[in-house]
Length: 396
Ligand code: GDP
Ligand code: MN
Image (tube, rainbow, N blue to C red; front, side):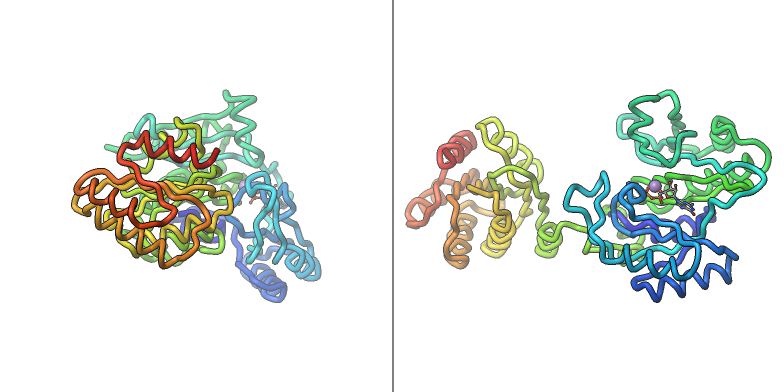
């Protein structure tokens, strides 16, 4: 589950990670109040107005702006709130900004230079371990750094048996070229960051940039946090951080009916019971020359209710030209599922695309008979290959 920068920073702060302080605002007036509060609490004259959307590259898209007085705060906030922000990560349609974070300006001049560092903690699936990835080349596109100068990206592997060790945090601070007070601060920063990642069962914490300020403090200026959804039952207080406005509306609706749906770009809708079978179905559609429009696992109970919900979700996608239903009947008997498909079809009424149903397992023959005799625009098959070929046939 992705969360906003301001929420990620709140989590970081609760683990003792120093952050660029800020207050979230939904209107220009609230933004001005937030700026006054930051002045009172942290004596920051300048602030940055930062669009809160679930995508990076906001700076490049005009979603991060410096404001040097309260008039500018109001102006920038009213420009950014409600805008359709396009960044390299949003796609051309962009994302609508609902909130801004008013944050203290931390790039103030001082006795030493500010320095932008890249740091992330994530799971390396190949190694089966958490790693801390870091680089002196922070602030900019880390993908570009990885491509052009991979030698500037360091990785530190964490042994799950002992966790992050002190020497590792010191090595990171050293490799980043930090000395004196900044070095000590970085050691503390790394330890607190790792603790936050580990304790919250996250799959990613990406801080870009981590800033070394001109007075040698180390703080998180940005926070891209991905909390592992499967572990959220252990962190119920984070559930309310979910922002449905940032998610695909069809996927949200599917979730409400307990359907596991992921939208894809093809034209063959599929409805399957079981995630593994769903993946196999998508493969066979491709082998037969089609392109799946979605992944949809209706789970163990493929009855008229779930099939109907499945149809409704799939049919919201205008690209869908045919639907392949692939059900393995074990405990749910195939004839029950077939009846469910027929009932759902009749209830929805006019389904504008052909439907191919492949039912295999208990009572498959009876199920095929039911479908064939239903008089609906539904084609039946028992073999998966046969079903996939039927799909390509109805599409051509
Ligand atoms: P992103 O573009 O979505 O990754 O958003 P960031 O939070 O990383 O901010 C983008 C850029 O805005 C940073 O790399 C900085 O250059 C700039 N920025 C962020 N905070 C401040 C600040 O306090 N003062 C100034 N002058 N610039 C800032
Ligand atoms: Mn950033």
